Image (cartoon, rainbow, N blue to C red):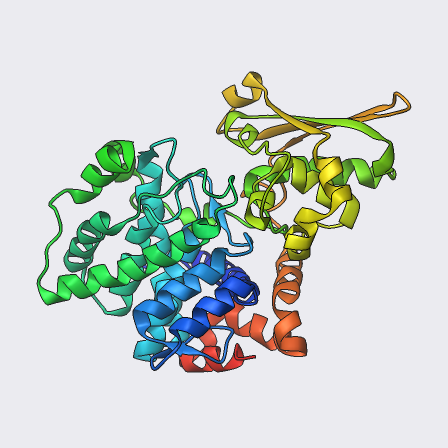
Length: 424
């Protein structure tokens, strides 16, 4: 099916945003340490001077892309389809010296295939979406770059369905940064699925519905899956400006708006209450034990923003997590579910923040959604600025040329030029 120009254009934004998140993630100590352990002959790792075998490059790129929680997501799909498609597509494109246009087409193919399955799947409540249906998107991206026809690509997806992960939704809440490798593992396994198909291995007939309806998921809506054919999920993506879970960002926007109205002395705060819908209300930890737990804590996100003036990568560092003043303010933030807000999902994603001061003053804000949502898109200038903040610390003034190349991949004759531009 031909890809309309406006879809390609938006996909270029998604690709650039995801590459920025990957570069930012490559600077994290655990990502860098793992890359150095597994470096060797192979294809280049984006944003580094290292190389790795193709499957490991897909894994390490996916790991980097989720390490600081800056990658995009998609509400109808129920997760983060871009990184699952981009990571294996980069590795495979590098191995084949594909064009920038072929890379973009593969990313779109992966994004749509993964999103379509995610949209039809009801994951079990304890499962995290990363690493589950994303393996479908990974396989689709690789199949696209290898020129597989529709039937062969479909066979790869059926095989990939059995290669997803059993992921835990609570790992991040409890400080388990293992959550950050889920997307990388799915990227690696999606590539493996296509290799296995080409070697003669077959998947389970109807395996997508079985795995995502009975194993990882509790139901698979075949009608919704069929109806989603031809729907461009990539146009429904959300993009972030803060280095934390999307479900923390309603409260983050509410406190931003209150602070814009007038300053707040954190030392005079009596208490903060956040009322929101059920899934967001789970992010209620008031004593996070690690950076990833802070990124998945509404109380910590609000507190670190108030004290540090931002919610960027540094606001969730190990030092920030341990800061006594931030921990004291975090303890004053209480998160509750508002059943009326839960009932208004998925049409509205509401959050109410009530700030109570020691002098008796009360200030309140209610927000619906957050900037970057499909119905509240960020201007391109804001995404360009996010890319700068992600890339400039390691690449300096070269970030502008890197943005242009990532934003308009169709202008790149060979992805080798992209990897060279992103070398530090």
